[in-house]
Figure 1: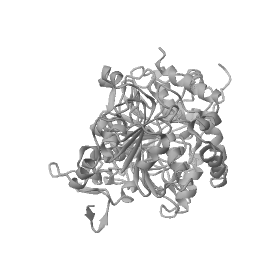
Figure 2 (figure 1 turned 135 degrees about the vertical axis):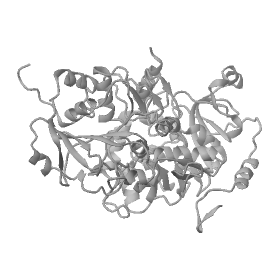
Figure 3 (figure 1 turned 90 degrees about the vertical axis):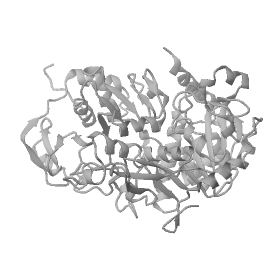
Figure 4 (figure 1 turned 30 degrees about the vertical axis):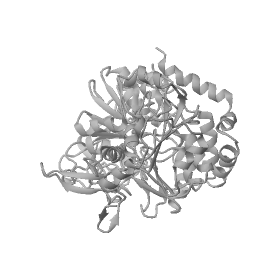
Amino acid sequence: MVETEGKSIGTPSYLELRQELLRRDRSLRDKVVSLEDATSFVRDGDSVGIGGSTMSRTPMGMIWALIRAGRKRLTCSRSIVSSDGDLLLASGTCDHIVTSWFSQGILWGVSKVMRHYVETGKARYDEWSHMAMGMRFRAGAMGVPFMPIRSMLGSDVQKQRPEAIEIHCPFTGEKLLLVPALNPDVALIHVQRCDAYGNAQIDGLQFMDIDLAMAANKVILTTERIVSNDQIRRAPDRTKIPFFAVDAVVELPFGCAPHECYGAYEPMLRHMEEYVTLVNGDPVKGMQQYMDRFVYGPKSWSEFLALIGIEQLLEAARAGESIYDA
Amino acid sequence: MLEKRNYTAAELLTILSARQLSDGQVVFAGVGIPLLAATLAQRLRCPGLTILFEGGVIGAFIEPGKLPPSTNDQRCTKRANMVLGSAEVLLLLQRGYVDVGFMSGAQVDQYGNLNSSFIGDPLRPKIRLPGTGGGNDIASLAQMIVAMKHEKRRFVEHVDFITSPGYLHGRDTRRKSGLLAGGTFRVVTDLAVFGFEDEKRRMQVISLNPGVTRERLQDNTGFALDFAPHLGVTEPPTDQELDLLRELDPDRLYTG
């Protein structure tokens, strides 16, 4: 690790980054595993990058499985964090969130769960600007240790992040902020379809997922559907993540529930409303009740979906597919 | 119509914000009142207004009654010109393609700085708020319009935490910190419309909303107000503005 004034900022040296990549089996091979088996790719204490943004294409099924597998002390980074962050903190799976915005959603004000864990110091929330998060993943994907940006300067957001370093540009003399590369140990990304090798197609909004996939040292894909490699090859322009960046593939229909997956389903807002009312009423007992019923209770992801209910799933799917209507 | 129509504070705020926009502009909008205001302007006067969302959308065109729950939902992309990565759309701000950023916050201060991160001491906060999202990027890199409800606890001399920079500590402190472009252009509230004086870069009242006196405005503000020499009075919302706004947000998600 690179030392800055004695403090490790978690930025690997270039050769360490290359070594991590060399250790992976990047051959064209079948990577399909069960949801439970995919959890073995994440170790306690790992830095985990989470794909999607707010309530969109959140890898909720994978997060749900990691909580059930009892992973601990994860550091989770994401462009914008929603109820996924509530679940990660309340279950004790994660004690450190790195993001630009963390609440359940604009509709519901401030997450009482986030407030409880962050205000009591039980968990840490490092705030970066949204663009800074993007440029940290971008630097990670590019194999360079930082990216220069022109935001955050002068604000208290900058003052709270001494790991970002202000410089005078060697070409223009202008002030710039260098934000360090983020290369998570593992990335969790949900896509609409991929093949067994991990060639992944993302429809609609990509958020920061492509940079995240290329920056991470391992990638677990969950997918609405596994398709044949022939189907991928018929439209290679739609492939956004190449197979050699992917380590595991899990077929998981409705894998973002109760969040949305572009073109497949919108968020299950009634479930979200019930969730928010329960947990913002009492962030400790409410979360416990929710997790007992919806995370630890079901035997499988399908059973969890059944608890949300067929009515809501169909309604969300109808709305989701309507994005392609004229 | 002879009788004066009633409207909520949020409706007034949305309508006055919409009036700040002009046709042909590229506007970066957050969900809630900023998006409603941009959409209202787009439908009433500015058909060539381009709305950007940080979820990665260029040219959003929101359908009445189908307001997106965040700027990252698929509803934001319906009838848009382009979808792209979140970093890419934020980089348009840095490159200089965005005319106006449109946002809100929990607190604003005399220099137009916004706080959406902490209430109280940031090291031991009374309330940890959600944070900047793209707010800091928008405020750092574009002309910013701030729309918020006017309350004394929100209009403070110094914000508890500068999440999104206005003119920082006034005068040239913004430029000296390395923020070479943009700055807070207008603050729109349910009581008045504010601009910023050229030299000190301090907030000043440019127009009072219908029925609002200087005294009432001062009583609801946490710092001593400056008034522009030619103080205006805001035109009340028109029927057309109110009707269209109610069509856009029929469930009163953001304008109740």
